[in-house]
Length: 302
Image (cartoon, one colour):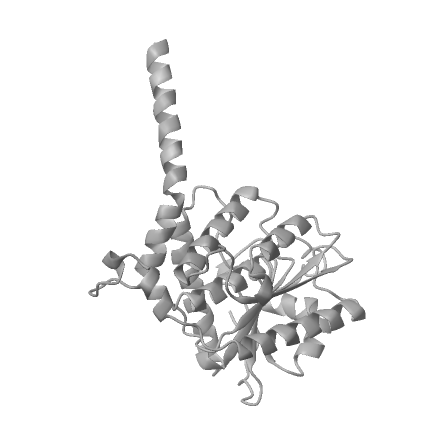
Protein backbone atom coordinates (compact mmCIF):
# COMPACT_ATOMS: atom_id res chain seq x y z
CA UNK A 1 0.00 0.00 0.00
CA UNK A 2 1.26 3.47 -0.86
CA UNK A 3 1.33 6.34 1.56
CA UNK A 4 2.56 9.06 -0.79
CA UNK A 5 0.33 9.88 -3.75
CA UNK A 6 2.05 12.50 -5.83
CA UNK A 7 4.02 12.74 -9.03
CA UNK A 8 7.79 12.75 -8.65
CA UNK A 9 9.37 16.04 -9.65
CA UNK A 10 11.48 15.67 -12.74
CA UNK A 11 14.18 18.00 -11.45
CA UNK A 12 15.14 15.61 -8.66
CA UNK A 13 16.23 11.98 -8.76
CA UNK A 14 14.16 9.54 -6.73
CA UNK A 15 15.33 7.85 -3.54
CA UNK A 16 13.01 5.05 -2.44
CA UNK A 17 12.61 4.76 1.34
CA UNK A 18 12.20 1.24 2.78
CA UNK A 19 10.94 0.89 6.35
CA UNK A 20 11.96 -1.75 8.87
CA UNK A 21 10.07 -4.95 9.62
CA UNK A 22 6.70 -4.38 11.28
CA UNK A 23 6.47 -0.71 10.30
CA UNK A 24 5.07 1.22 7.32
CA UNK A 25 5.83 4.05 4.94
CA UNK A 26 3.97 6.46 7.21
CA UNK A 27 5.90 5.34 10.27
CA UNK A 28 9.22 5.53 8.45
CA UNK A 29 8.38 9.03 7.28
CA UNK A 30 8.12 10.08 10.92
CA UNK A 31 11.22 8.14 11.95
CA UNK A 32 13.30 9.82 9.24
CA UNK A 33 11.93 13.32 9.77
CA UNK A 34 15.28 14.98 10.52
CA UNK A 35 17.15 13.08 7.83
CA UNK A 36 14.44 13.57 5.22
CA UNK A 37 14.49 17.31 5.76
CA UNK A 38 18.07 17.38 4.47
CA UNK A 39 17.83 14.67 1.81
CA UNK A 40 14.74 16.21 0.24
CA UNK A 41 16.91 19.10 -0.94
CA UNK A 42 18.52 16.68 -3.39
CA UNK A 43 16.06 13.82 -3.87
CA UNK A 44 12.38 13.13 -4.17
CA UNK A 45 11.83 10.76 -1.25
CA UNK A 46 9.21 8.10 -1.91
CA UNK A 47 7.93 6.08 1.05
CA UNK A 48 6.35 2.69 0.37
CA UNK A 49 4.73 -0.07 2.42
CA UNK A 50 6.11 -3.59 2.29
CA UNK A 51 4.02 -6.27 0.58
CA UNK A 52 3.30 -8.47 3.60
CA UNK A 53 1.18 -7.56 6.67
CA UNK A 54 3.08 -7.99 9.92
CA UNK A 55 2.91 -7.59 13.65
CA UNK A 56 4.49 -4.34 14.93
CA UNK A 57 8.27 -4.47 14.83
CA UNK A 58 10.95 -3.45 17.37
CA UNK A 59 10.46 0.06 18.71
CA UNK A 60 7.14 0.58 16.94
CA UNK A 61 4.89 0.30 19.99
CA UNK A 62 3.50 2.11 21.86
CA UNK A 63 4.32 5.26 19.87
CA UNK A 64 2.69 4.02 16.65
CA UNK A 65 -0.10 1.93 18.19
CA UNK A 66 -2.81 3.80 16.27
CA UNK A 67 -1.36 3.26 12.81
CA UNK A 68 -3.65 1.46 10.33
CA UNK A 69 -1.18 -1.26 9.39
CA UNK A 70 2.30 -2.73 9.75
CA UNK A 71 4.28 -4.50 7.04
CA UNK A 72 7.44 -6.42 6.25
CA UNK A 73 9.41 -6.94 3.06
CA UNK A 74 10.37 -10.59 3.28
CA UNK A 75 9.53 -13.72 5.26
CA UNK A 76 10.88 -14.31 8.73
CA UNK A 77 14.41 -15.68 8.93
CA UNK A 78 13.55 -19.36 9.00
CA UNK A 79 16.60 -21.52 8.44
CA UNK A 80 14.44 -23.87 6.38
CA UNK A 81 14.05 -21.32 3.58
CA UNK A 82 16.64 -21.90 0.86
CA UNK A 83 18.61 -19.12 -0.77
CA UNK A 84 16.97 -19.95 -4.09
CA UNK A 85 13.63 -19.26 -2.42
CA UNK A 86 14.99 -15.98 -1.06
CA UNK A 87 16.00 -14.90 -4.55
CA UNK A 88 12.53 -15.69 -5.86
CA UNK A 89 11.04 -13.72 -2.98
CA UNK A 90 13.32 -10.79 -3.76
CA UNK A 91 12.06 -10.64 -7.34
CA UNK A 92 8.49 -10.54 -6.06
CA UNK A 93 9.36 -7.62 -3.77
CA UNK A 94 11.05 -5.78 -6.65
CA UNK A 95 7.92 -6.24 -8.73
CA UNK A 96 5.76 -5.00 -5.84
CA UNK A 97 7.88 -1.88 -5.44
CA UNK A 98 7.78 -0.94 -9.12
CA UNK A 99 4.02 -1.46 -9.25
CA UNK A 100 3.64 1.01 -6.40
CA UNK A 101 6.00 3.45 -8.13
CA UNK A 102 3.98 3.13 -11.33
CA UNK A 103 0.86 4.15 -9.43
CA UNK A 104 2.68 7.31 -8.38
CA UNK A 105 3.74 8.05 -11.98
CA UNK A 106 7.37 7.40 -11.11
CA UNK A 107 9.34 5.83 -13.94
CA UNK A 108 11.87 3.13 -13.18
CA UNK A 109 14.66 5.20 -14.71
CA UNK A 110 14.07 8.00 -12.19
CA UNK A 111 15.20 5.84 -9.26
CA UNK A 112 18.86 6.35 -8.33
CA UNK A 113 18.97 5.02 -4.76
CA UNK A 114 17.30 2.98 -2.05
CA UNK A 115 17.52 3.92 1.61
CA UNK A 116 16.47 1.25 4.07
CA UNK A 117 16.25 0.76 7.82
CA UNK A 118 16.81 -2.61 9.53
CA UNK A 119 15.10 -5.21 7.29
CA UNK A 120 14.61 -2.44 4.74
CA UNK A 121 18.39 -1.98 4.71
CA UNK A 122 18.88 -5.61 3.73
CA UNK A 123 16.29 -5.15 1.02
CA UNK A 124 18.08 -2.04 -0.29
CA UNK A 125 21.34 -3.98 -0.56
CA UNK A 126 19.58 -6.88 -2.27
CA UNK A 127 17.81 -4.67 -4.81
CA UNK A 128 21.05 -2.94 -5.74
CA UNK A 129 22.54 -6.41 -6.06
CA UNK A 130 19.90 -7.25 -8.66
CA UNK A 131 20.97 -4.18 -10.61
CA UNK A 132 24.55 -5.42 -10.65
CA UNK A 133 23.29 -8.82 -11.74
CA UNK A 134 21.58 -7.25 -14.75
CA UNK A 135 18.12 -8.16 -13.43
CA UNK A 136 16.57 -4.81 -12.55
CA UNK A 137 14.15 -2.39 -14.17
CA UNK A 138 15.90 0.47 -12.35
CA UNK A 139 18.54 1.13 -14.97
CA UNK A 140 19.81 4.27 -13.23
CA UNK A 141 19.99 2.77 -9.74
CA UNK A 142 23.49 3.60 -8.48
CA UNK A 143 23.75 3.21 -4.71
CA UNK A 144 21.96 2.33 -1.49
CA UNK A 145 21.97 3.43 2.14
CA UNK A 146 21.79 0.91 4.98
CA UNK A 147 20.72 2.23 8.39
CA UNK A 148 20.85 -0.25 11.29
CA UNK A 149 21.03 -3.10 8.82
CA UNK A 150 21.12 -6.56 10.32
CA UNK A 151 19.58 -9.97 10.81
CA UNK A 152 18.49 -9.69 14.46
CA UNK A 153 21.77 -11.19 15.58
CA UNK A 154 21.40 -14.38 13.53
CA UNK A 155 24.85 -15.56 12.47
CA UNK A 156 23.23 -18.16 10.22
CA UNK A 157 21.30 -15.48 8.35
CA UNK A 158 24.42 -13.32 8.02
CA UNK A 159 26.38 -16.30 6.73
CA UNK A 160 23.70 -16.76 4.08
CA UNK A 161 23.90 -13.09 3.11
CA UNK A 162 27.69 -13.28 2.86
CA UNK A 163 27.42 -16.39 0.71
CA UNK A 164 25.05 -14.67 -1.70
CA UNK A 165 27.31 -11.62 -1.85
CA UNK A 166 30.14 -13.98 -2.78
CA UNK A 167 27.98 -15.37 -5.59
CA UNK A 168 27.24 -11.87 -6.86
CA UNK A 169 30.92 -10.88 -6.62
CA UNK A 170 31.92 -13.88 -8.72
CA UNK A 171 29.30 -13.04 -11.31
CA UNK A 172 30.74 -9.55 -11.81
CA UNK A 173 34.32 -10.87 -11.67
CA UNK A 174 35.32 -9.54 -8.27
CA UNK A 175 37.98 -11.85 -6.93
CA UNK A 176 37.71 -10.66 -3.33
CA UNK A 177 34.13 -11.81 -2.79
CA UNK A 178 32.98 -8.33 -1.75
CA UNK A 179 29.65 -6.69 -2.51
CA UNK A 180 30.32 -4.61 -5.66
CA UNK A 181 27.78 -1.80 -5.24
CA UNK A 182 28.18 1.71 -3.85
CA UNK A 183 26.87 1.76 -0.27
CA UNK A 184 26.58 3.87 2.86
CA UNK A 185 26.25 2.17 6.24
CA UNK A 186 25.09 3.89 9.45
CA UNK A 187 25.13 1.91 12.70
CA UNK A 188 24.02 2.81 16.21
CA UNK A 189 26.66 1.88 18.78
CA UNK A 190 23.91 1.19 21.33
CA UNK A 191 21.96 -0.98 18.90
CA UNK A 192 21.62 -4.58 20.11
CA UNK A 193 22.49 -5.64 16.55
CA UNK A 194 25.39 -3.24 16.02
CA UNK A 195 27.69 -6.16 15.20
CA UNK A 196 25.36 -7.16 12.36
CA UNK A 197 25.74 -3.75 10.78
CA UNK A 198 29.51 -3.81 11.11
CA UNK A 199 29.70 -7.22 9.50
CA UNK A 200 27.47 -6.12 6.61
CA UNK A 201 29.69 -3.10 6.00
CA UNK A 202 32.79 -5.30 5.93
CA UNK A 203 31.14 -7.47 3.27
CA UNK A 204 31.16 -4.48 0.89
CA UNK A 205 33.98 -3.29 -1.35
CA UNK A 206 36.01 -0.78 0.64
CA UNK A 207 36.52 1.59 -2.29
CA UNK A 208 32.74 1.83 -2.83
CA UNK A 209 31.68 2.10 0.81
CA UNK A 210 31.24 4.76 3.48
CA UNK A 211 30.30 3.87 7.05
CA UNK A 212 29.64 5.69 10.30
CA UNK A 213 28.62 5.04 13.89
CA UNK A 214 26.22 7.14 15.92
CA UNK A 215 25.59 7.01 19.66
CA UNK A 216 22.00 5.74 19.61
CA UNK A 217 20.16 2.43 19.53
CA UNK A 218 18.06 0.75 16.83
CA UNK A 219 16.79 4.03 15.43
CA UNK A 220 17.41 6.36 12.50
CA UNK A 221 20.02 9.04 13.35
CA UNK A 222 18.33 12.06 14.91
CA UNK A 223 21.09 14.26 16.28
CA UNK A 224 22.01 17.16 14.04
CA UNK A 225 25.69 16.25 13.81
CA UNK A 226 24.91 12.61 12.98
CA UNK A 227 22.38 13.60 10.33
CA UNK A 228 24.85 16.04 8.77
CA UNK A 229 27.57 13.40 8.65
CA UNK A 230 25.25 10.82 7.09
CA UNK A 231 24.03 13.29 4.47
CA UNK A 232 27.65 14.12 3.63
CA UNK A 233 28.54 10.45 3.18
CA UNK A 234 25.48 9.93 0.98
CA UNK A 235 26.57 12.89 -1.16
CA UNK A 236 30.07 11.41 -1.49
CA UNK A 237 28.78 7.99 -2.55
CA UNK A 238 26.26 9.59 -4.90
CA UNK A 239 29.04 11.49 -6.64
CA UNK A 240 31.34 8.47 -6.74
CA UNK A 241 28.65 6.20 -8.16
CA UNK A 242 27.73 8.78 -10.80
CA UNK A 243 31.35 8.90 -11.93
CA UNK A 244 31.73 5.13 -11.82
CA UNK A 245 30.10 4.52 -15.17
CA UNK A 246 27.44 2.00 -16.21
CA UNK A 247 27.40 -1.52 -14.84
CA UNK A 248 28.77 -4.06 -17.27
CA UNK A 249 26.35 -6.90 -17.92
CA UNK A 250 28.63 -8.51 -20.52
CA UNK A 251 31.10 -9.44 -17.80
CA UNK A 252 28.29 -11.07 -15.85
CA UNK A 253 27.22 -13.31 -18.72
CA UNK A 254 30.80 -14.46 -19.23
CA UNK A 255 30.89 -15.82 -15.68
CA UNK A 256 27.70 -17.88 -15.91
CA UNK A 257 27.89 -21.58 -16.76
CA UNK A 258 27.46 -22.20 -20.53
CA UNK A 259 24.32 -24.23 -19.84
CA UNK A 260 22.71 -21.06 -18.52
CA UNK A 261 23.74 -18.68 -21.31
CA UNK A 262 23.16 -20.87 -24.32
CA UNK A 263 19.91 -19.23 -25.32
CA UNK A 264 16.41 -20.60 -25.14
CA UNK A 265 14.31 -19.97 -22.06
CA UNK A 266 17.21 -19.63 -19.61
CA UNK A 267 18.16 -16.25 -18.20
CA UNK A 268 20.39 -14.59 -15.65
CA UNK A 269 17.69 -15.33 -13.10
CA UNK A 270 18.26 -19.03 -13.79
CA UNK A 271 21.93 -18.40 -13.22
CA UNK A 272 21.27 -16.71 -9.91
CA UNK A 273 19.14 -19.58 -8.67
CA UNK A 274 21.61 -22.15 -10.00
CA UNK A 275 24.59 -20.51 -8.33
CA UNK A 276 22.66 -19.99 -5.12
CA UNK A 277 21.79 -23.67 -5.04
CA UNK A 278 25.45 -24.55 -5.59
CA UNK A 279 26.43 -22.24 -2.76
CA UNK A 280 24.29 -24.15 -0.29
CA UNK A 281 24.81 -27.61 -1.81
CA UNK A 282 27.69 -28.46 0.50
CA UNK A 283 25.64 -27.56 3.56
CA UNK A 284 22.72 -29.65 2.32
CA UNK A 285 25.01 -32.61 1.64
CA UNK A 286 26.46 -32.37 5.14
CA UNK A 287 22.98 -32.35 6.62
CA UNK A 288 22.00 -35.41 4.56
CA UNK A 289 25.14 -37.25 5.67
CA UNK A 290 24.40 -36.46 9.30
CA UNK A 291 20.85 -37.74 8.91
CA UNK A 292 22.09 -40.94 7.28
CA UNK A 293 24.59 -41.50 10.08
CA UNK A 294 21.90 -40.99 12.69
CA UNK A 295 19.62 -43.47 10.91
CA UNK A 296 22.43 -46.03 10.75
CA UNK A 297 23.15 -45.60 14.45
CA UNK A 298 19.48 -46.07 15.29
CA UNK A 299 19.32 -49.24 13.17
CA UNK A 300 22.42 -50.64 14.88
CA UNK A 301 20.94 -49.95 18.31
CA UNK A 302 17.78 -51.82 17.32
